Length: 153
Image 1 (cartoon, rainbow, N blue to C red):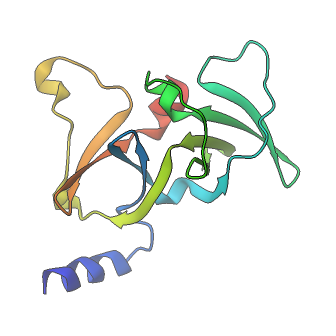
Image 2 (image 1 turned 120 degrees about the vertical axis):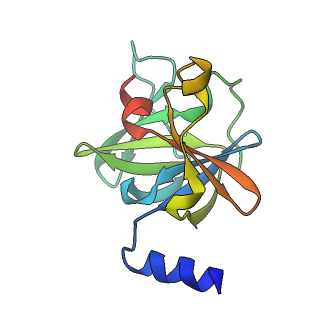
Image 3 (image 1 turned 90 degrees about the vertical axis):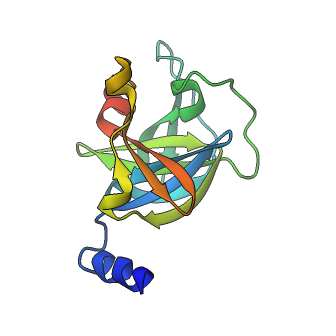
């Protein structure tokens, strides 16, 4: 019965409260599905001089030049070689297409609003600039990205 209620709530808006989840090391992160254009394997990346370290370079995707950001480096995690599970999530934000490199894509997950809460950092006087909310579904925690801060801070 409860699952039907979630489904009915989700059908009202095809993107509302839906997140593409991906994994970095053992953590699950989510990005609002409304920003996602497509998921591709990692192609050849052209290095660009004087970019911040997390910006790995650019790719040519069907004639469009797209900058790519390695999420591991952006999160100050140890860099690792790309493998068959590594992929790029192409997102659109502020009329720009950007690729984000992740260890692996997990699933599209509908998280009802009541299972989303603010990060606890406000009480700890610690500002986690990249996480806007925390989803709690299927006995797991999903760290939901603030895409604006992820891209521009």
